[in-house]
Length: 448
Image (tube, rainbow, N blue to C red; front, top):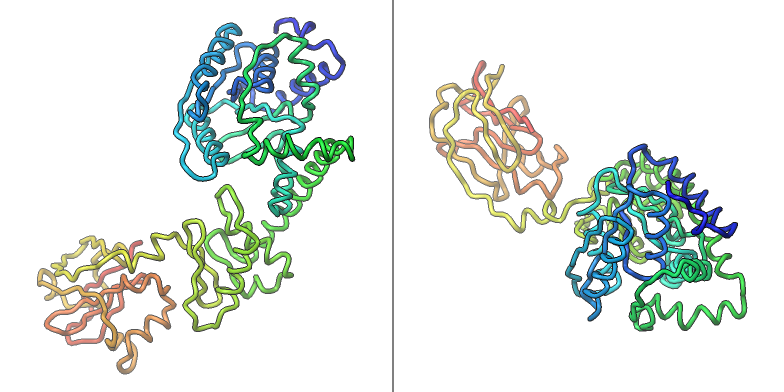
């Protein structure tokens, strides 16, 4: 490595370098770094320090959100600085969707990071101590819970990548001092002073008022974020235990769920609804799920829609259904058709994948090759199930088989000359008693 004496003169600067090297030892051996660089003071200092400590292991990426007239000039500035430091640089232009500008810009930025990050790279960002304190304060004002108040983690291991924030314990004042000491160039983004944005308002209008009364409040707030991170990890352990007892990511057994305390019920529902998403539902949305679905009347067909999923209760179980699955009956039409069946033939039907096989008791072999009718049930049909006594309403048989209501539209009746031969269902093929039943015949077997 190159000499670092000129860069790390102060004791706290040497401590920073030591903490970076210590953290580096915890990463896999071939780890490299992709630095998100906006051209501002924080990211330019981080870029310089990472290039100093880890030459040959650093790349930089500048995201042009196209929200400022100078954004192209800033991109060129970052590219020039990287060239001077002998660091490969990526310039990526993104389109920011309408809506909450801060959130949409963040989403576009992280999508670009994912697109360019190599498999062995850790994403390195320049968030510092004041950023952390502001994040916690803004989340507190928005009514966040423990997970939200945990704010940003120094090393954030996610499903698709890892984020490292080496400056998170470094104050804004130290960054300014260090940048001046190294005589580093950087750009000033005017949006950082635009109090239309919550973070800029917090920084410009609120911060100095709080600090005038509580001079050490920034360090205190950051300490709270670390305590919340501890609490979040403990809560996560409890949630995983509760989820293992009550179900999985697709369903919750309400008999087990209702054994939990009210607080654990709320927390489990919140985490369960979040799933693999970025954000938890609001407190009000969790309460709606409890009031409108979980505790609704047993015969109610209640469902709650949130974040592309429907939450439905059936037989004392709460299900989390993809929107397409829940709305399939409304959005799809299943046409009647004719089949000519042969042994070992595969059938792809709305209710599943079937295969024609010989059976101890099945349909007459004489039916093979004949045109058989397949039609959706229309209601009111009755079936004499083979091996059962008497005719049953088909609806009652479906209910007894516990076929989910949102899957019942896939059920089809197999017949010939108005004689019911059987029923294709998501639980398999039901053989109907008829003159076409015979020993050693054939029947469709559900494969998947």
